[in-house]
Length: 193
Image 1 (tube, rainbow, N blue to C red):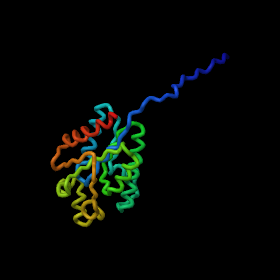
Image 2: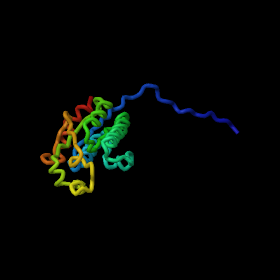
Image 3: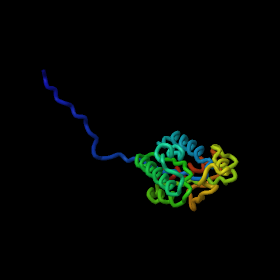
Image 4: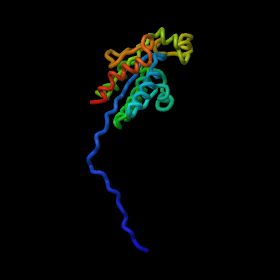
């Protein structure tokens, strides 16, 4: 039996190729404001342009990462921290993390912005409460008005609008295509840096 030498694969040099920068696109607004629709369309548009992108939807995150949290202010802020942490991990690998979450408290969003620096890009869906209630895709406003849901954002719990979002749009006056175009117009130059 002949002992054949074991071939070792050639390892790449220690020099690393530059990795594209990821960005957190944080879409905030009331329930029914159009966040998820815009996030889904934006993600498809970015992937179509060759970017790596993922959507972190607030409802999905609640089921899988933040299960057990209630809707107290403390739990909502913890939920936002968790979403921000996962989004930050994605951006380290060049992924555009598109967050679609009510994230009602300015302090929570500002905390994620401070931790993310220039990689944070806030989109405010400023759709008025009356329009969100009229749309009410999940029937949540109806339940909140009937007293079946407590601590519901916009009804008996506050929503603190962003003070200086990178983009502000409203499903009342802007189509989904117009909103996505506004976001891309502001976002693409940042991705080119």
